[in-house]
Length: 219
Image (spheres, rainbow, N blue to C red):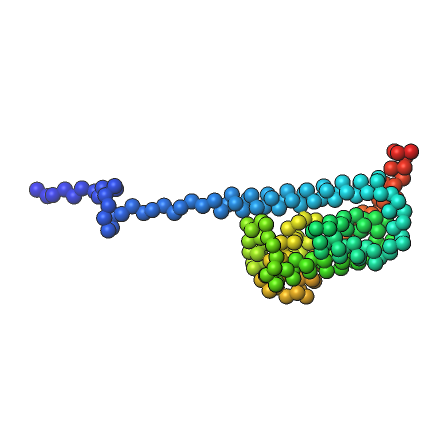
């Protein structure tokens, strides 16, 4: 008669039969989706606000548009520079790019505005480089810092093409990670120039039409 060997109890514990602990689940995927959703929402809000601002200025500040030729390309450069360098003093620089495209040579307007916007972003870069930046959204900043570490200048280029507030944090992250300043300017200028060229081109083909339409609507 042979002894029967019972199969090991799956609930038994021991050095060889201890149940394996399941890896703890994380919320990394939902967190990434929420961050991406916030970025898209911020970008959409900026675009909508820009369109509304342009419309309001065309209706309310018509006198400014009529005198815009006195400001010239330097005025476009200056508003682009200040508008992207200061958060406390917001200036709708893309409005002036849009109107400038309908007043001057839209290609030159787009190029000049792109240079001004890129130089304006230097304030964020220098604050990050010197470690003096005040950051409210730490989670989003860490995301931007991770993107800068992983993708480098591509992050700056993509965020510069679309109007959005995240570019400020990306600039701070670039400075904090000691990303080369000249490279920073080149990537920002390339992306922002695409954006400003689009706005200048749109202005060249719509400012006069919009003013004519508003005259007919109001008068």
